[in-house]
Image (cartoon, rainbow, N blue to C red; front, side):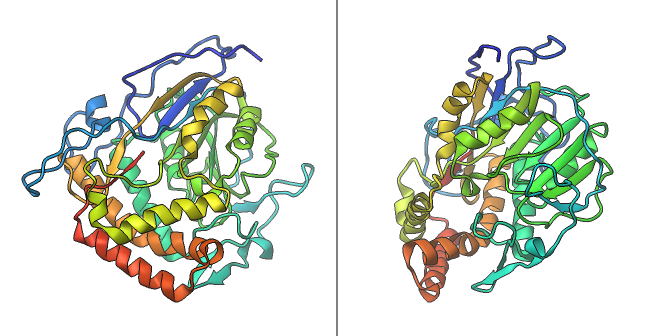
Length: 395
């Protein structure tokens, strides 16, 4: 493989995003800057987007709160993008969800069966059936609505961008791993009609009516990938709670990218924090914050794992590894229209996520009873609604 080449871009715009590049591409061209165009703006946000607008630090809105804070320290989490490219030859499946083959010679178009649709029910929530237990969050209607809300937050945070990697407009194949509801894959397919987009997830919760250049596959991205072609672009978003071995995942990405293609990880860096220690004013939220990180670590998932991904990318011979970071405020305490909108929606997102995120980890890993978890969740909800903390999550 070509020797890694690394570049520094200190002023990169980003949202827990990083890029890496395989040195030699078929065309001999290089694309060294993050994508800068935008397709939409947030609600009532009409100003022209700039790097500063998208990824500036958070400042308390003193018109609403009689407390002032300086820009947050640059402690935000990092996200990774990587390069490599090949020629796409994907089968078009008109949005039909299909199960991952157990053997490499089995058809990728295997129909859905009971191993995929026989969902598991616990604590009043529905969970995935395929590779049961690999993912701790539910997949029911409430979770689908929350994931759609979260997609909206990403839209606002990135000012309508779907990716930061400087991918060419004429790419022909894209893989979205851990695609959830398929919202990102569908939008990407709409914007790149000549690109065949494949979305994979443990749950077949994607819509039936999608663009003709989209297919969804029920797949476990922590198992060996057996796709019949390589991809120009591989994308993921918020998959941290489902990944125990990032080194193996990056190796799979390397094997399935075309020379010169890109990988982009858009991730968060848990736990929530506050620069002025106001998180301590919310003891239940603070406890949940620490317990979730602890339980996840005991289950083999580090919620700050994305911080180690740049070095893994270097070890796997990716080049042009770039990183960028921002912060999402919890609640509308920060200055700026965009920051307030993100904060309001993240508050709704977290209120909808805490029970589903906590129940399996608390009961199975920490040994709490269901009753104790529900009482704790209500206390955390009360802390969030009180809006005493200037908390944020690094992105």
